[in-house]
Length: 177
Length: 173
Image (cartoon, rainbow over all chains, first blue to last red; front, side):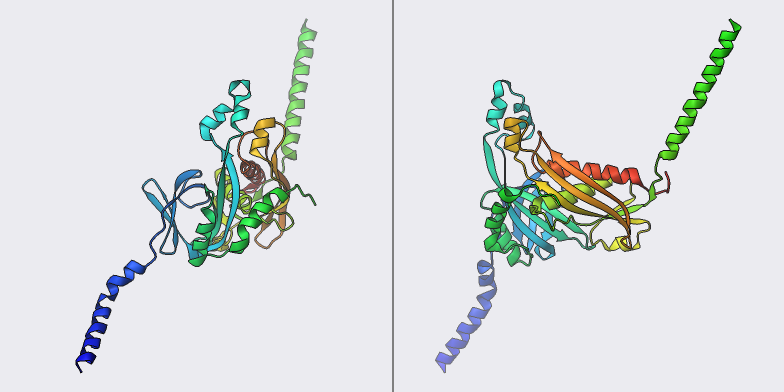
């Protein structure tokens, strides 16, 4: 009888403590990924620097003090790709192009590899939007996986995406009807 | 002396009549604009051409931004917008990529003459029922300055200009 009482007490204790245990096991939000929003995110100007996190099933783009949330469930297509940009870009990069003795051309040899994350999504009115983000190499695929796990759709299966997009670019030749 | 003066006046009057006539004929040649107060932009199609997703999305977004800026329409709707169903004088823009050459920004900066990126897009403006109103082939190109995606911006600017030149909220203006 005493053993049975102890078991009941233990079970009650476990039940009582369970709310405190669950939040510890819950998925922690991943560290923010530095990204540039190239175009398409509603309410954000083109070429805005910020950071991306995935929280509560939303892609959150934070820039300055503003946060823009994009529900993963509203995403019709998520595709990753590869790109590169000049190591010295922006206004300074443009100015270096007119530098003397061909030094601007020499500087253009130095480039940084990037990954792109392209998202097609629908807003509350059903309107189709497209957003493009660039980020450091190795981040886009992980973000895509997480978005798909949260309900986003993709036209390119996850395991094939990196291979397909990297193979697509060199194959792209001018084709006319 | 008087005769010379008279002849001068006659020549002056004749030339005025001639130029006025030319002006009127030129006005006659201007095509009347099609009445359209709003436009719905369909997502860019590229069934025959392998187009990277970022180019497809950039074409679509740049097109919408340029039409809002320069198109002269009261409303620019995106594909799927439920509000477009009630819009009067709605025109739908369908764009199909017919040619694409992805260049290289690095090549452009190194050689100046090589590495251009170009996109050929067939644009079809239709009414709500799908009847074609206007068709144009428009090319977006980046030859020297800028990243590859600038080609989409150049295309969008030209497409918005075509829309501005051919459509107006009030007919014939």
